[in-house]
Length: 324
Ligand SMILES: CC(C)(COP(=O)(O)OP(=O)(O)OC[C@H]1O[C@@H](n2cnc3c(N)ncnc32)[C@H](O)[C@@H]1OP(=O)(O)O)[C@@H](O)C(=O)NCCC(=O)NCCS
Image (cartoon, rainbow, N blue to C red):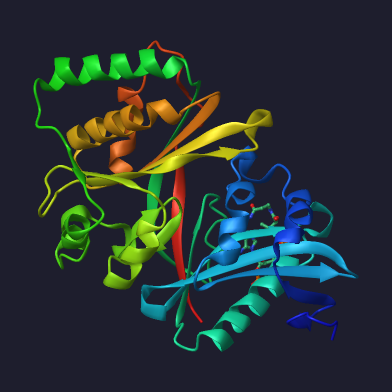
């Protein structure tokens, strides 16, 4: 076995990722997720994140794939993310080999891990997903605009809310200490907010609402809103905007909504955009994740004259689980 590698399988050698592998990882990542790839921004943070493994696969010394897993839910679950295979190696089963090796490696390191969870934006169909349990599907509304267009966009949304709903109670910002703790650890939260598969999905990362995951959520710099500070019926947060390769360099802004009411969903969308407005520069892609029946109402809400437009038809985030 090559020195310092962590194993080999099917002609591939496996290595834990290092900072100096960044350029090679970017070289196999071109055009992934329609330019929305988060990995250029997150790679270095992943390398030092507690309970995360970032695995590289090489063939004859050349990088061919990456997969990562974060152990969460009191050590019971590994959430896998970042899977990619270099374009010239696709279609030969490399992804399967890399996933099997990484699953086994993580299980050796964390024997408490029982299940693997992941989210996907491409619906590969029932046959390909047969090895997984589909825990839930979320709707995604995707918008795009130059940062300057957001001022007019927000004014139009605001005018719609006040014309159609009148003065509504303001959403409250939850602090990430006791307030958030009280909300997330409330045993009723899953049923009250219809949490997808019983989880909070933060920018594609599913986490059960339990004590040990609060620390993971606090690392992400989220801004939380709720319709009330105790026992909310609507909860949402945004992840700070981050750079993506789209169109030569853009910002990606993700908003996750939990709950079934359209009125609080509209106000939450508006409020998150207002709060992040100062950080929006250049081209911005906004992705809003929600309970599926809300999509049509939010699509209609966002149809205004300002230059922020929907950039994708209805699409879904799939939340999958498999026993290891
Ligand atoms: C998706 C991708 C990783 C597949 O790589 P590949 O080596 O060509 O995959 P293969 O067609 O050989 O399929 C091999 C295995 O990977 C699985 N697989 C394919 N796409 C997958 C995905 N998006 N998520 C998880 N597993 C996937 C297949 O089900 C198959 O599993 P099995 O061997 O257990 O049956 C590759 O096309 C790629 O890098 N695409 C761009 C990045 C991307 O879209 N990543 C998806 C992350 S959700």
